[in-house]
Length: 279
Image 1 (tube, helix red, strand yellow):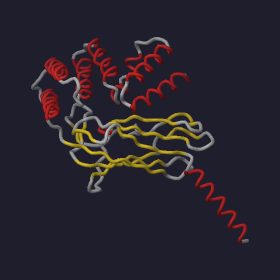
Image 2 (image 1 turned 90 degrees about the vertical axis):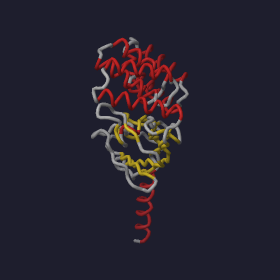
Image 3 (image 1 turned 60 degrees about the vertical axis):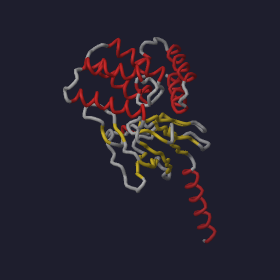
Image 4 (image 1 turned 120 degrees about the horizontal axis):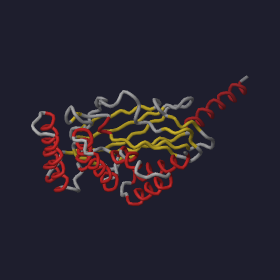
């Protein structure tokens, strides 16, 4: 009887360990320190570290939580649906699926009521992810990062950007004024950490408010080519419409991948290429 119970417990323990070790969860941050209002770029990776295929759809199976240095949880302000969990049909052994996200979209205070730009106050934070795949034990991982107040030129860009966006919402500036002010700001500070915010807003003003679609397309191309980021990835499909064949699209993404200094988006581009090759 004892032998039977021991064998049964051994089987249960082995099965539990096997299931828990089937997947690996990792969070990667582009940087350790960000400015207030700067897009906080995070890559969530799930890898099949087992020896058999596993389901790759992790929607609604993962939870993100952000805490400050005091351990207080930062309120979630993102979409009501899961837009941060990686997903694919299935994962082969040693295969990884990625999701590239901008943490500002899910946590933080909003710049203004018109746009998706959010910000975290200066301080130290810990981002935690908990994945509970079907039939498997939960997997937990976390990563720390810091947010600091901008200074010097970046403070000037940040304050100017806030003035422009607040001025548009308040009716102080027309859409044409906003576009011109954003163009001037981007021209004067093309290497600012806020360039991604500026170009995203400029694209929206040209496309939605002014109906200048060629100008909007120009801004998207610049964002994709020169500012590899989560937002560049968001606009990639729009830019790819100008490439007719699958091979043209794949070659275009390979070019972006080779020219990018952002190691996180390089991995996402690789996944995009694989997805295109499958279809």
